[in-house]
Length: 353
Ligand code: SF4
Image 1: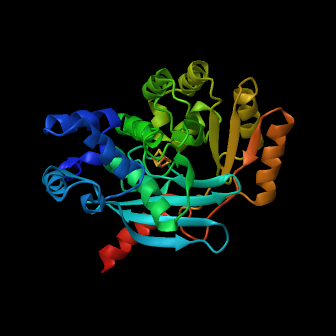
Image 2: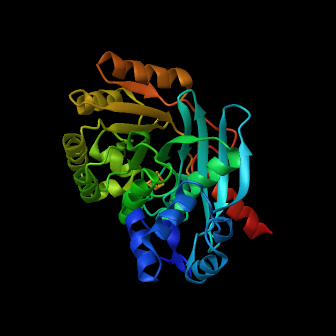
């Protein structure tokens, strides 16, 4: 795996306390750390030149030692159907990542990527096609939220880590990102408004439970039994469904946060009568929520979305059996909706040039 090519120290990935002690290490007063943290994480400055209450000499010193890694927009697609926008960002090493802004009545939500590519290989996912290129730094995850807030001028209140990548495969950086995003000296997004999606990396789900954060854990379930899950998600070969479910229960026990289960509905693959029955058996005694997501077609994979009426019938069956379920409203289908699609299309176009 290629490492990120940031040459100077990544100052935007330091925690509040780390930044204060880092300033002391370079012979500066601790309050300098507080000032810089506020510039980066509250005022969203990505350049030392913009930090106008710091002296010119100090800004020069900072510039020699550190950088705020750039997350630069290269494409923006605005949906004509929904209040949804997709952004393609370029990182300092030329890597491309995608993020999505969705506007709801309750506020603006941003879906971010946690890795460049992904090695989990889920069959229905466009992000998995090229494999994993590298992990994102905390600053690069934050940069997606900060850039979207700056570009749109709209306050972001919710963040979901459900874009390209498996966040728990980039555990330490992901955890730091959550702490920075919810830090009271920064953007201060409530942990209750942050959702992390995992395909079920059991040891890290348990570690996360022990952190006792207030974020929501969303498990990508997608199959109602071990065999079906294994067929759709190679990671299921490593962790049995029963183990994954126990890890979800453990998360609930430690945090008091009800887990969410994500289930991509794929026509003829996991949307049948037996699938509904198994899902009911799996979830009915759990305090949880189930999101059904009619799959975004991925042409490389040949998966199709079930018809609306079939998806509704599937949902009704579950609901009648006491499952708390919603069909996630399809958003941005006209703007390369599935994560990874815009990035792939951009990469293909670059190759053809
Ligand atoms: S669905 Fe998520 S975990 Fe699975 S391959 Fe795609 S990005 Fe990775």
